[in-house]
Length: 238
Image (cartoon, rainbow, N blue to C red; front, side, top):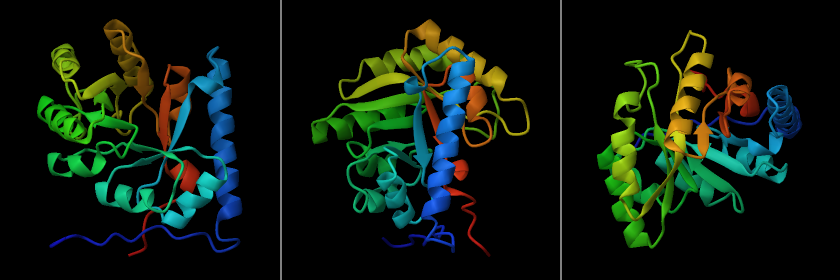
């Protein structure tokens, strides 16, 4: 594609190709999720770990899959397409901000789109789903704290968006997602999102990342999106 930017992917650790460290990190994250669920009286099996593989080399994603990880999340359509081709038999999620010109690459390729925050995007997903003969599961992204640096619909506008999305035949809204503001306690945002979800009669809450997924599980997350704690630091040198 003209003008496409090349992304440097995170390479394996040097000792054993990274497999041992990756397995240890995965096990540690799963243990922490289970402990957080038990602290809040929840079944650990009710929480899905989505390993966010943005900028991670496909070989490491494949190693995680071979180690039993079933759900992976991407935030770039181009990387999603490339990794789906080499990592079979897993469930894919789209967790980043989805542009309408990338909808065709995502709809039908993922089990769940986490980041629908406007009707125009939902309508584009619906049109693509109709052409593909699928019903695309989505979550509505809510900017609970009104942080201008974060995407998401304002809580006051959520009921109207949900009603409009529910009228689309090619889209199924299964719950809500949020990304808390950085540098503040995320727990109030998690509590607020759970209250919104409960009031609307939805099933799922996608909330919690590497720094705060335990608090998210304690507050009712059904999906956590964990990248760095699973794959390590993915910042490319230079």
